[in-house]
Length: 249
Image (tube, rainbow, N blue to C red; front, side):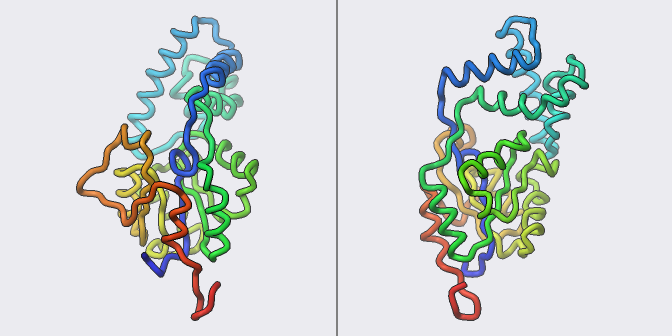
């Protein structure tokens, strides 16, 4: 346990929220996306092309550690053959529908109570997430009554840099005014999140074990988190009430 931790940053995808498959919801998202774009070709052909371009973008972004804005993602990468002046203004909605095709994103059951308790214990809280959406996470936080508990929300789609590059971690620490050595990060990726946290000089990395992530990217022997948890509420065993000058903060 690191008694010097002042700020706790959290990942979102597969950390604070998980994806639940809902076939009807997923089908409707694809249908709505095609309607919004005004697609004339068969659904199968359209999404096969979209998936191919999406994979090309993902490969490029992971290698360069640069995240495109929503507008650039859709006008330059995913739908480059459509008029940019039409697609650009729709990019926010398109991103949400594109993500919804994977399923519903719902918070883990102990997220809200854990966030509130960490805040009560005196920790500065923030979010650091690789994501293509610029609005979905803030909208979810607002809907679930969590916005007030997070001092900084740093999204790769907004700042243009991705984990595991240390820049996004440094930006988050800068926004809350805490030295990286006094920051902790909670994420689900056993390679990217651990490497990025350590490269940024954070004081602690906590890995939440998520089967969906581990199936895609198993842990690497050379990178190890400081702690491993299975539920968000286990963070309360790691972070006690903060004390300032000998008194609880």
